[in-house]
Image (tube, rainbow, N blue to C red; front, side, top):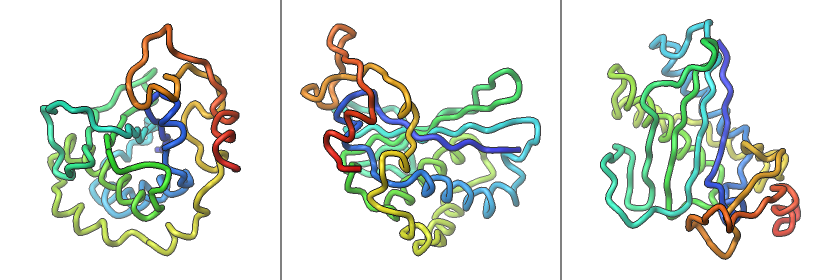
Length: 203
């Protein structure tokens, strides 16, 4: 089996600037850690028939409404949501998305704190989809993350080192003045994410 780890964020200009400035290697390390310590021993997501594509999606402002589902990892400032099951593409790829909606995650989040968020995002996915896992097991595993290794990756990382989905193509976003609010199609602007990002950050 093989795994592809991706990161995405809400399609607005402000989210481009407030996304975590953490290396993609941190997300990959956290997944590898969970895979070695939990998935492989439990024989979960180990089929050689598939490529597993996992997307960690970030949204940076909690809407003022009630949500029907509450993750056991949720706090007042961070809500976790997971896809139920996988979408299968051409019988060889299995795709799943995990999301965090947060009021306190932005470009300043430090690598180790970010790693705990990724751990909880994937942990929520496991609790949603597999009865063999429980929160106590995940809570016991979380402190075993290698903090020294996580903090050895460059921070803040460069645009190229971050490697979010869609970083290499132009796409429409809500303008900066809209903040995190939704914009209609007529208000959307096409941007080159690298060009716009480097107007605000030096690397």
